[in-house]
Length: 354
Image (cartoon, rainbow, N blue to C red; front, side, top):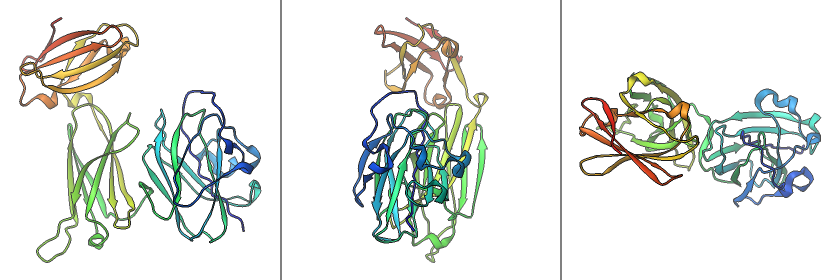
């Protein structure tokens, strides 16, 4: 039977009218050569409703834009690698796999539907392919998205696995104000498959996970792998933080072991508020420095909104040791003017200097 594998990608994005890609229709599907990366974008395409079956996927997806690809399998096991995703909004990718005949929705059978929440590089493992048989990929953009990405059908995986794998025995958390300790237990059977657990983190507003630690496997005097591991992270701003434990295997896969979320409350951190008075949507650059040496400690951009930023908190928990005061420089890019604030960390007071 001719099988159809459909990969659907959705990103909420503003309405942008751009030209369709040539492979907007299934009959004009782009042929993918194995192990060769192609770049594409989901701009302006339309749905070929006669070739999809929305009822089959239910609430998992909402079709909006799509483009079609095809490849011929030379192995029963291949990987679809997605990398270099660039989208404005943080909804990640949704992967839907069907089997069935070309443009005959009544023959489709749902194989899997996976929803992710980041724009990380990912791989999807396809098993049970028939050598010499053709397959289809359909990549779909959600609500007028504006995304670019790289696509490859390969013999090797790249990026994170799309599903959490059962390679961990237990995970526990210990939360103390702005400090989180993650404890996990790995079976000693993994000793020959990898050498470390990777710890990743992202904030609610970030599109991708960033690696923050590499926790090596430990062995005792008898050469037996230790099974209990932990990692402590300290954060200095309130908000929700997402953590991912991942295991890089010796065959180049990166398996996701577990994902954990943690919210740090405003009350857990010390802050001093600055009185900011700017025009709506002024582009500001905030720099925190040591007033004695002028050394820059932190910097970040800010688009000024009066309701949100008039009384603006500077979280000082991370500076509680080692500094008596802070200098905050606020540079307005719109008029090239800089205002300086002085924060006395002992008195917990801020003074506008000039």
